[in-house]
Amino acid sequence: MIALVTGASSGIGRDIARELAKRKYDVITVARNEKALQELKEELEKEYKVKVYAKIVDLSDKDNCLKLYNEVKEEFKNIDVLINNAGLGTCGRFTDTSLEKEEQIIDTNVTALHILMKLFLKDMCTKNKGYIMNVASIAGFMPGPLMATYYASKAYVVRITQAVQKELKFQKSNVKLSVLCPGPVKTNFQKIADVKFNSPEAESSVVARKAVEKMLKGRKMIFTSWYISLVRVFTKILPDTLVSFCCYFVQKRKI
Image (cartoon, rainbow, N blue to C red):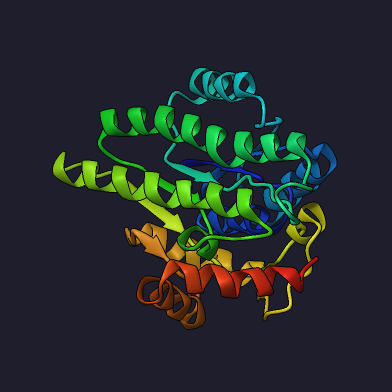
């Protein structure tokens, strides 16, 4: 069995790679940080006696996504698990934030995820088995003033996953497609996105363990705490205008 994990150099992606290695999956780790991937490779191969293949890839480039798929297809023919975890964010007024950085966010959070999900899902549907987990966020269920691009990108992840889940159901496919929707997690995301969370942050190792367990059980929408599940309920009940009002002041404290 073999799994591919994007954004595997730190945080949730790194810990998901560990969880899969514990379950004796060989792992293809994908990220831009070569040193971090090499350290993870040595750790997993030593600790769990699995094979780890580190691929240094910038997924914000569409051509790199296609190249990655073709390389994996040629080397391994098929994979059993895809974890679409790579993601970027930024914080600030929409008129003040960097257009270049926002383009990278969209290219990584949306385009790369879409490409890899589509291509690997086709292969899994041919085999009629496999697991894909797209990492979204509780942010994907609400408007996010002061983090508008990030929230919108995660809304895309939620909705594309839900739509394709329904297609797979009507196809009677055995492929399992999940979307992970965590809240704040202790990762490098805060540094990259220029934010500081003021709400309780979950340990990425705990989020990863629960996520993998629920994915392998075929859970479609994965929340890793009762608190985040409750937030999801409120986003459905309350008007969007009130949710966005509250989000504005939550985000403002992060800047």
